[in-house]
Amino acid sequence: MADMGLMAFYPQIKWVHIAAVTTSGSLFALRGALVQAGRPRWAMAAPVRYLSYSVDTVLLTAALMLLTILPGAMFANGWLTTKLVLVVVYVVLGTFALKRGRTPQVRTACWLAALLVFATIIGIARVHHPLGWFYRWFA
Image (tube, one colour):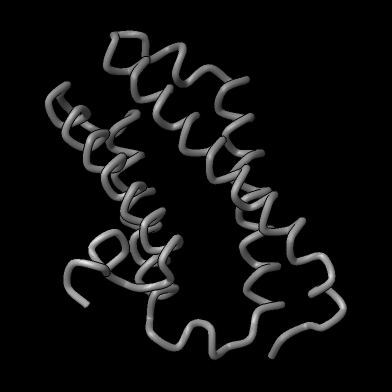
């Protein structure tokens, strides 16, 4: 059910969400590049990690606010469910890319896969369809 009181703030909340997505993705790409460059200590330094946690908290908060204010019918075709499943995949790949991957090859593959999943999530969000960027090709 839509929260009509918060609906007045929809443009601002959406802007915060998009800014947080952009910042979060950029931070992950940077941290992954640092790991790839042989600088994992820089990628995992406390200030960088805490900045990432803070941005992701803002991102999640804005996402939950958008979820509560938008009408349920907006999500009827499954795009949001697909996006949420891919967010979990992205997070798991990200942990292997940054520190859990046992070899440099595993970390590289997971980093590239996570970036691909991130781009897919963006595509799904842009077109509001589970096929994301491919929607126009197959629909």
